[in-house]
Image (cartoon, rainbow, N blue to C red; front, side, top):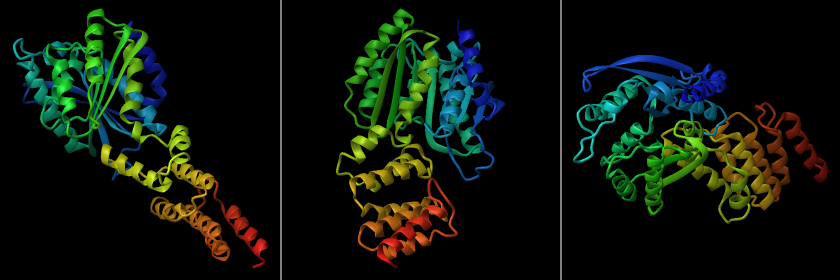
Length: 383
């Protein structure tokens, strides 16, 4: 069953994966006293974007989880639903139980489990940071035994991961209480995703439901928690459904302005549309450690909000943002001209529209469009 599911997933995502760079490496670990194989997917155009930094996703059980995570990461980032990221798969075929082991008294990583914990947190991440252009934002993914294991990082005073994707975890004793306490007292932003399926292993499903009820009671604005129980999903098939949902949940703030936001926030509240746009992208930069240019579609959403609410003063600041993000295009010129046109300065608006001559077209803005706007003012006022 699992092989058929993974073959289907790879077949669907094959055209996507073929466009991304996948590298196979062997790391010599001092902590483990042995070599470990990893898979690395770099974003599209990684080599061309010399200044760009990327979030990192560490995927345990990389021998079967890497391809679904890497495929979704590449596909979703192509459509601007999530940021591009570096995906690292850690192969654990034949070692996963030992890697995820814990002692029977304190229920903390022991022996090879302790060594594997240090390998990931101290050796692997350092090597990736040294070799590739990484941002400060990291997520980690695990399934049953390894899903339990990823939570040990959350128990540290300064966790090295901000996002945790738990796929049907086989929880150690006290893990539910420990994670609940860690999230309840978290001092920095954390994303926690938990999934099971209606046909998951019964013992796991029971503990996961109990765990989710504990987490739902957390009152901490710094914690984003999402739990899902997928109908008709087994212990293995839930993986294919949970990964895209988890990515959407973690990177919700990264996505373009939605129709719901447009209708309920930009049109129905007193919030400044331009300030909303600016704060949104500052939040993206702060949360995910990346410098994200404001999307042209988001500029157009703010433009439409200003037109509908007739808050013409908003165009002044929006023009400055456009000049910073799309210099040498007509975008800033158009917003400046609309401000002058609607605030009683038609002659200045006409001249501003004319300034678009020689600038680059963008979105619906062309030289013909801008000159026609100028000529319309000229006809109306007899200039």
